[in-house]
Image (cartoon, rainbow, N blue to C red; front, side, top):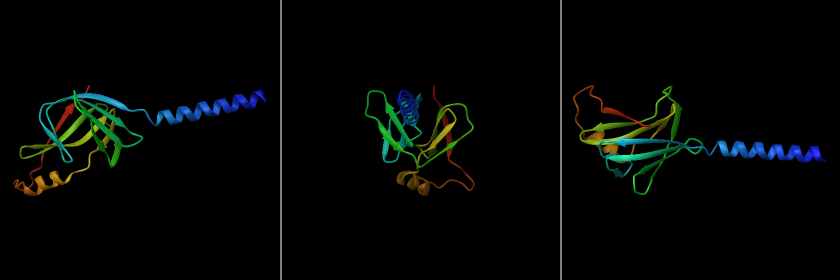
Length: 138
């Protein structure tokens, strides 16, 4: 009987550890020197805490002294990068958040309607690409 209780307790601890590991999130702090858009929201330049919950595919962007903006990501992949950073695309004078990479795992931010509008409205020369900027996190 004692052995069965120990086995059940061991299984319970293992299941708790597995459930907890899926809830581990990763944080990085970043200073973005320009305002940028995420979906329909324009975020001002400043310090942000970025938290990635890989199990849920959720990225939380928390500006200093403000309410967090939640982003659902549709795709994540192992980027091979060991650094943490935010990647932005610029069309004209507008910056858009494209990717959040923390400890080598990239979370791709879906392109919003406004970004698609800016792409369609811009008239770059042939073969021109948007400006890409990586802002390092720490």
